[in-house]
Length: 456
Image 1 (tube, rainbow, N blue to C red):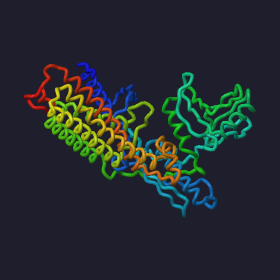
Image 2: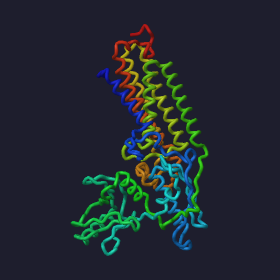
Image 3: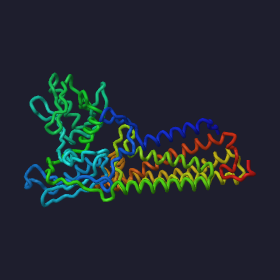
Image 4: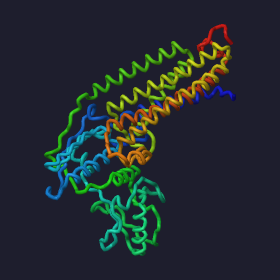
């Protein structure tokens, strides 16, 4: 088997240190009083209501109550839940008062929130958000989810756009609309606000259409609009009066968060000490990989990676992180025990490391794949119907009614991210580092790897 280079250990170590620093502290700068954020860190995590507090709003319809059915109220609840989930707000409470036709919603503040303006926080939840294509005479050619399947942010011709994916019916309507309006404008509206008004050059027979946001628009603007389109349209506009808004105080608060962080750091340190005491050099490498796994989970939650929004970290989400760390420890224990077993069989250092990782891989893979399947099922069953996991499970979940439960979705998400980074760090990074460091002459002693002093 091909040997690893000596430099591999330092390269992987530098990458883990860099990821850990950026994941926890982020990279930003200040231009006067304006913060320029380049990479999000732990401070940009959106914390749940228990830790940071939030806002409570009572939404009431802007039409006569007599015209509203119980099915309409359930549809309104579903859309509001979708909007919360698409923005990665998983810590929320939502109730429907059918008698008074009201929807009561509680959700946490955004990450980095300083103004704590409840009216601003709820504005986007109650708008109908109906996307339409209209010609210069006001005729509506395409409308909402019946013609638009999904939307995503994009970048075309040096400008930020929203790419609309049309249904088959929407494609036919779009072709007819562009065919009938060649040389004229075909405007795109969100409710009564015009988003863009392009001039049709020719009839377009395509499943894609573009919303050009214009100069000054950012990637976040495109992402936000795409999220609003994907969340769907309310059956009627709803509003929350200023008198119905309340600020929800945290039940745990930042002090409890600090205690949890300190306790977690102590627990991680004790685990690393025990790993090093038991497995020596493999324990040191495993501890480095375990820190990398924690950093990877923080990065996946904070919005560190491009195109991934900050995720609401809830108590169930923290539980998912803790469980995945336990799985990561188990992964390293299995590999280290196999290496020690190979020394007992008389293997050399290189032979013991190679055979140890090879013999432990199937057990580690089985455990990780099992947890990944559970995580995907949880996210698909209790997340937004528009989410990737829900679409993967749509052939099965279509047999049941939709059940959006943010706390369970949060648990599934952090567990999935933890297992993915466990595999990357606990299997790939650990193996690369251990094989690399074993090439140094000063490290060519079996007792450093769990073997006896008299072994070679």
